Image 1 (tube, rainbow, N blue to C red):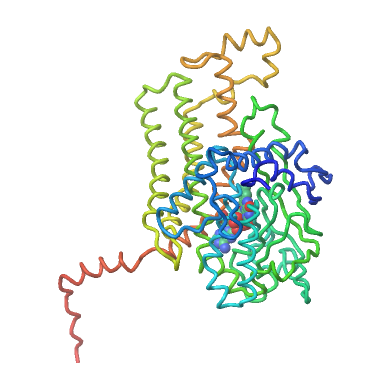
Image 2 (image 1 turned 60 degrees about the vertical axis):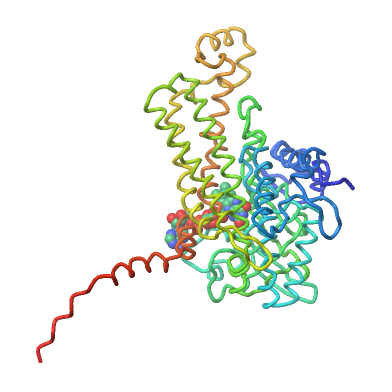
Length: 492
Ligand SMILES: Cc1cc2nc3c(=O)[nH]c(=O)nc-3n(C[C@H](O)[C@H](O)[C@H](O)COP(=O)(O)OP(=O)(O)OC[C@H]3O[C@@H](n4cnc5c(N)ncnc54)[C@H](O)[C@@H]3O)c2cc1C
């Protein structure tokens, strides 16, 4: 066994007979398939990086159980300093993919770690379910597993409860239970990174109604569990023309998939909640799980925002427009927006509080960040596209055009820039398009707008967790400081 899990360990672990389908066929090996192999390698790179001698200290910590070094995403910060130490490791991982892998291994690990921090809630609910959470956290941490999750029921008729859909097992739910465990049938959306994760956490974060008890479960299964089918969306990696043409799609297409549970058996030791609507919701919100998972998202987003700011400034340089006051104004606005994300991230850390033995980022600042950034991301993308003009499109059809000497000569004459050689200019605008406008980029807009729930959901969290009493108290205090006219006297 290596000092820490490395890329080879991870890639090998994915050759496990999982049932992944794409383009009408079952995939024999996700690590070799042209729809997935580069994304798998990008995930492997994260593990390689943490295992390198120069990084192991910053990126990993010693498991208290085994002593083996495991990713800091499993670390349970006891104070502000430990939180920051953990964040630095997560930020460094995000920099390896420039923030484009939303469901990197640190996302769901943060959620499960948060659930473990809230073990008291499970103990009060059912000691056997608490034991399952405790054992699973230790199991996943000590193997440094890559987890994904599916916590949303498939869209069908959103005006009806899960059990009231035409097919009561459209949304994955308990179809049977026996001495060994539960049997699960139905679908979940959208298992991002599922093709290259080791295990999947399955539950429901949406509000459930009485009658939805079968869907009110929480459990983990390996991605090769018998009966678990993974239905991939179109692969952008597979459709990437070349690394030069699609430098992001070709490497960081983490995949999204519908997961279908065709009577999957879940042993009791992997069941965290069994058919309990209240606990299904509380596991996220009455423990630090939801805060920790979404705090990881803001760390990653900050890296991506910095990358996009870099794209914006390079566009301005490429077209010689940096000195125009209006362009500086736009760049200043983008810089301020990156600063907003940066400030909110540091704010939620500094304003964090103790939850028992653990230090947890500030809940409301996290939800404020989510609410604002899901609006901000599409706006920033549009602003940068506005800066770029037709340059994003005025590029050769593919890198193959350079092989034709006649075309190469015309490209050389026409791709002019004050800072880039013609070939570099093409290279840069191909990258910019992959970040801003390609199908991969468009999926990223949808991701940033929805990964944490629709906007009415995140605003609801912001409303729920804000200190209204303090604000209203100030209004009341001022109003109490001057007299109110007496009510008119009633005539007898
Ligand atoms: C790229 C991508 C990756 C994802 N990855 C994952 C993942 O790894 N794991 C996972 O579990 N989920 C994942 N998701 C799913 C994500 O969590 C959901 O998209 C999100 O929770 C919103 O749910 P929904 O898509 O069903 O939208 P809906 O809930 O159907 O909402 C869509 C719109 O309908 C309207 N609407 C719906 N319901 C109401 C209501 N009650 N009141 C008012 N308006 C309403 C709103 O306008 C809303 O914006 C992913 C989504 C995307 C886009």
